Length: 288
Image (tube, rainbow, N blue to C red; front, side):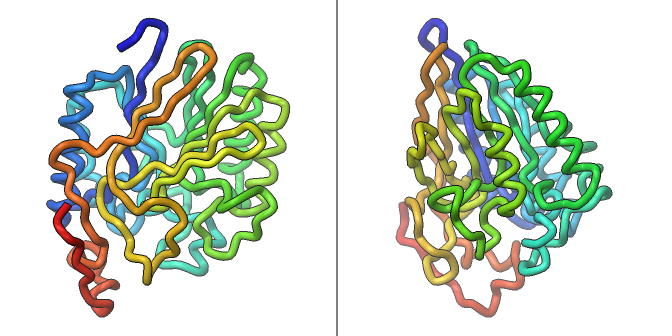
């Protein structure tokens, strides 16, 4: 590793569960890559579990997978871990986030939001599922963020599970894949005036990088599976893998990595994990 640089390994959407050995094998491949690279930190961008929001027993498999991890490790919650944003839950399969689910997550993986200083940067990790929750938890996170930003005097990066938007802040959210509009607007208002360089997310099971008003918006890939086009619009690249973030005092770089042993998998081949998919039929991928 070069001097005056920090390397952060990024993994997302591992979807671990006792009945998902294929997803665990891919997570183990990511672990081996990280152990060989020896970066300074690993960040998990959420959906650690396949469905702990419904079945808390999934936490045990995830805790086992991340035990004795080769680097310091920070987690962010995803909709499968704590439940989804309230409006999204009304239109989807995930239950809504609530205090009990959030407390179970925190007991397993630690804080659902955090910040760190590195090479002059401030990196902020947010709980994306709190946006749109009309309760003290959302307000606490906004108050916490205001305090963090008050002490951020260099470049800033934001990490969370969901993208802010598809193409820009004026998008109307119709697919519940992105942050709720009111919460997104309030977040962007808070970030305005700071030296925001990037926003990083998972959730989409696609990878994408675009620049908007001087900010790089990056979608990190899943290690668990891809979602076929007939179930999900193709916006970025449908490829599985991990990422590496390199920070220097006034620059950053994202690198897409395909760890050895990580197998490209299709969601519809894994109805044992998500039984609601069983009637849709398998869509096989060609060997990677």
